[in-house]
Length: 265
Image (cartoon, rainbow, N blue to C red):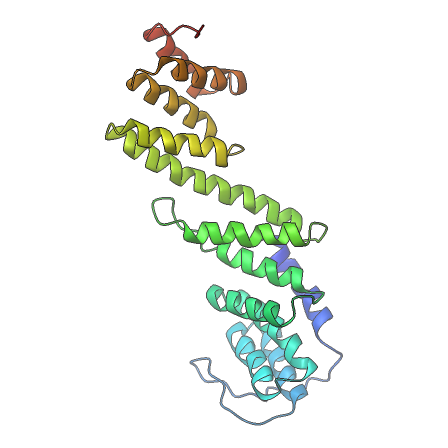
């Protein structure tokens, strides 16, 4: 599920953030637990070592080393560069919660920075990659959708916006799937009005998702079950008008015939 942008833009971010430097070697000592042994160094020495880790694919060490830049030199221009590089390194290390925290810290300190779009995108994609199965709580899905929506809203012409839009559609489909599952649960328990509320929410809140045809059919079933025939007819009619070739319309059409439901006068 990782986006091509999150991978292909790594080189661009490095070029934008770093200044030409001579690599002086790995000057930050890291243990196997990814902790940096405190050793006072110049800002360029620490930053160089972080880049060295990054270039070697040692992403967890790189992230910790970038963090060390800010720890030892918090008021330098390098600290700002390192904050975003730290977020990127955590992302490459698949430490998604740390990615989010680092990117959020960067934005809180530098909201107007030219790389803010990428920071927002890192937050969104990190939530997106943690989306759980529809049978579980969907808080992460909502967080992903909100963060990706910020990318589109704030930076509609950025190179991240198109990918964010696509993933927003996928998160909406995921949330709609959760609503459908709950609706079917209520329907099976013959709690029809609770089920109707869920199915109607799918249509209103997630009207562009793949779950809408089934939601309309389930509404037809539920309205028939409680004897509200005009609403049953309306749901089936909307289904037929918008999804005439759907299997769900065939099911609803057969129900209309079975119960001899006529168009309301």
